[in-house]
Amino acid sequence: MNALTAAHASLPFGTLIHVVNLKNNQSVDVRINSRSHRANKRLLDLSKEAARQLGFLRAGIAMVKVTVVRLGEA
Image (tube, one colour):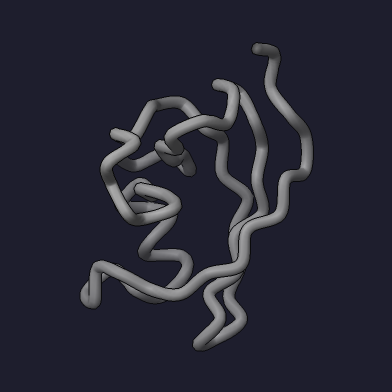
């Protein structure tokens, strides 16, 4: 919750991604450490700290751009 982490449906654990909030251009690097359910229509579930640093903690949802920095080991 307080680490810079995220859940994704298919990216390998340990993958490092760069996430940019398209509304305010704030960005953060997070590590994939959990799985989101494939039925979840959201691309990512970010940790509370990542959402805070991206400036959408109160809103709870935002449009983001995601770039893979380094793939984790499958």
